[in-house]
Image (cartoon, rainbow, N blue to C red):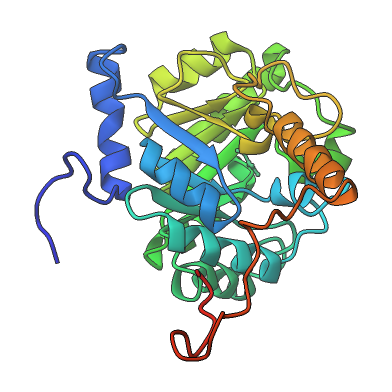
Length: 296
Ligand code: KIV
């Protein structure tokens, strides 16, 4: 066990993320903003971790960007656990947060607590994320009491797609904005260590960020939040169809994959792959080589 505070490559903890709030506030451009991204598997988790991402969220966006569902609603606890384990194996420095899928914390408290604990005990997540504000007060308090750090998520909460009637920017009316302020205060009071603000006006996000003492992580919430998160597949150009206006695309990985695969198809069909150098050969004589090794 280490009692040192986090510098450099040390594992990022929940208290580290909480402390960033005051560091960001005292110097907004001092590189203390909390950098978060989603990941769903071992190799991308490793790449994100090694690139210096602070928080990796195993988001239930998994359902849409990896599993091909129409929404996040069908995602199961078992699917989330499977992917959280893979991400955890790749993340050595970043804090790993697991999204609790729809239905896993909406029935009774005991069941919700058991599900949350599976993410910590079985999958190695260091925190869980739940969607909803005021209505999750009791749940967040109970999880916190059970030593399960909770990241809250308010604004556009994709698990509410049916109740909201689609994926729309939230908090645009005075009543909506007031509700979001109440939501943010409620999750803070209940013990959440951070709060995701999704698809809300930047002015409202700035006000919430100023009012609450826990870090705000924005996605479509403007630049004044304490940190930012994007869905990895969107920012890498690895999704189909349109992406939200807030999702900046940093690479065209989908095109790179398509190009590479088209080239491979061509090489196989015109017999330029594999070459002789990429083939194994029968040993010239049994005297020198007893077995054919995988490398030579
Ligand atoms: O599931 C997810 O990826 C998320 C982020 C968009 C915050 O909840």
